[in-house]
Image 1 (cartoon, rainbow, N blue to C red):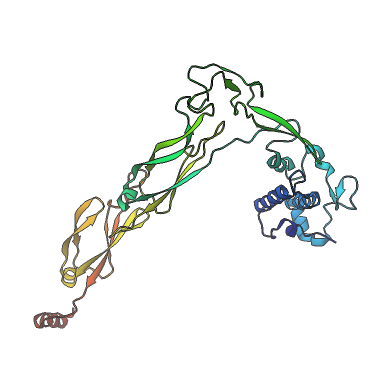
Image 2 (image 1 turned 60 degrees about the horizontal axis):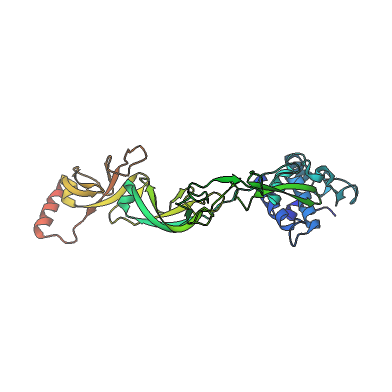
Length: 362
């Protein structure tokens, strides 16, 4: 019975090539025979499915002919085949299927390349996430804030080396100065050479004759650290700032990152629209008819705004250059929507005046 490769990988026919590759990676990690609880039969099945769907030409033919397609091979499980799929073409990690590199997938299992070499995955510290609340004005113009974090950081005494001040360093005898240790793993594909960071020198390739008394040779300590965060002008509520290398430090590896989520308090008057500020201005009917001058607040002081004669309800007046600054320090505008307040009650004198205006056609 023909196999449904899309069903095997858990993707649909509209899935992109990257989606197919991601699905295969996840399943291959799950079923790899060298892993605890792995399933060799399942691993071969998902590998067969990916050999077709991961190749543009084969996938096109498979989609066109469906169950009648026979591109994955003929016959039974013989000569290195399993369910019509020939594994001999990549046995021993020596190659890949036509259209994609199987070794790229194998690298994910073993933290290294195929036979004859490989690279160790870089060790990395934990990321840290914090929240900062800002006033509307601080978010508009930008500000520098200091935050105090209790985290693992490089040791101040040894500057992360792990050695006592003025001590000498010798070549690590475990890794012979390479900082990495090579290991060979056997699989049904063949033997794969992998590398990992040396535990003795933590990847530095050398060890101190005398260890640092502060961190005991670890090169890191847990302490309170003040970090200055530069918040750019015009940042929006919910935006994230990433500070590379300011997360948790780790022995013999790269520090994680610091992620800062920004929360901006709403303004009593303005709403932000890109680099512009939007607000409403209530005026009297007489001011709308005859014009007026009003004092309005901005983010950096009060200004006088001239209301033109015969301004309409809902008309927008623009105050240029008083909005939010951009990275070139050019500012947006303030957009003021005019709201005309109509009187709820009229005196006899007011009614007479309006009646006269009505006679004039106003």
